[in-house]
Amino acid sequence: MSEPTSKPSFLRRAVRRVVVITLTSATLVAAGAVVTIGTQELQARADLAKPTTVADLIPVRVQPIRYEEGYTIPRRYVGELETAQSTDIAFEFSGLVADVLVDEGDRVARGDIIARLDTALLETEIARLDASRDALNAQLAFADLSVQRRQALQERGFTSTEAYDQARFNSAELTARIAETSAAIRNTEIQIEKATLYAPFDGQIAARQADQGSTVSPGQTIATLLETSRPRVRVGLPLSVQLDPGADVEVKIAGQAYQATLLSMRPDVDSQTRTQTALFDLPESVMAQVGQTVSVSFDRHIDAMGAWVPVEALREGAKGLWTVMMLDDSDVLRPAAVEVLHAEAERAYVRGSFQEGAALVERGAHRLTPGQTVRRIGGE
Image 1 (cartoon, rainbow, N blue to C red):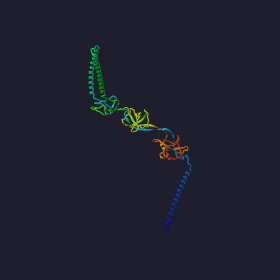
Image 2: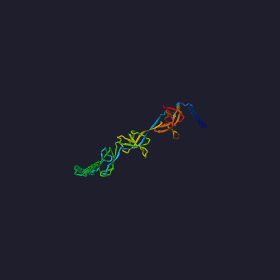
Image 3: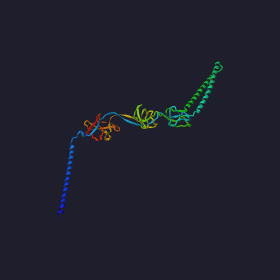
Image 4: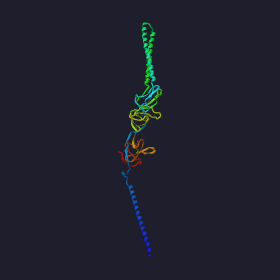
């Protein structure tokens, strides 16, 4: 009967020991954690109590302000490629087109034949006038003999002065009629010469507007000729742009850059675009199509005192204004208001309330506070 009673007592004592050991371990762990946290807190307070040194200040890179008298900005304007000369070739008088020797796209040299008119009627007219002149020459020869006879008879008193004068005036009239006929012959010869059209300059046929066998009137266009050896660029520029003749600019045609020279600027203003027209001469080696879009680029200088600053140095201020951070002699940040005159990708040209050589914070101005002391880097 004693064994069953002793076993429960033994189990209770074992459980009690396990509980005591567990509670003791937990207490020791908690005490260790409290000690660790306390140590860290004391260390943090000690760190806060340390005085600030130069090494603890925020480093900022600065650069000196350098004033300039102005800035240069690139300008780009769009123009059109055109020919130096363009003409509509036409006959001066009407007639039947005998032949057209060119077609659209053909290249011709100065003096090449473009077209001809039928000259059969003109050649017949010359033959008629030649015959008429021969007849008049024969009449003049007879009239001259009559004058000589009348003069001899008058000297002998066998004829009147009136008959002699009539013979002389008849000879003079025939001489005038011969001159008139010769002029008519020359006029017809000129018409025959002008019945052939020649190219007035080297170029390319842009359009053909008449065919063989058609009848044309005076001034009717037979073909349009473009001079392609000296291309030019026509572009409208703002009135504020002033260029001297002979100035060189860069032009781009289909992505290819060329050097162009200013020929002239028209003195009037375009009523629609309110621009002044400029003509630029291109090298003869340029191969491009007439009417192609051309971009003209050149630098424009603006007179304005100011300084270049990095874009990252700008800080947006109140009411749309801008500020930059400057360092005084004590390395304390001071704001300075600026006006942005021109901005590029990485820099801006500004003017404001700063002195020549002042230390400008290059970047990160938005993370700094006016009156803050920082550690200076650079600025020499």
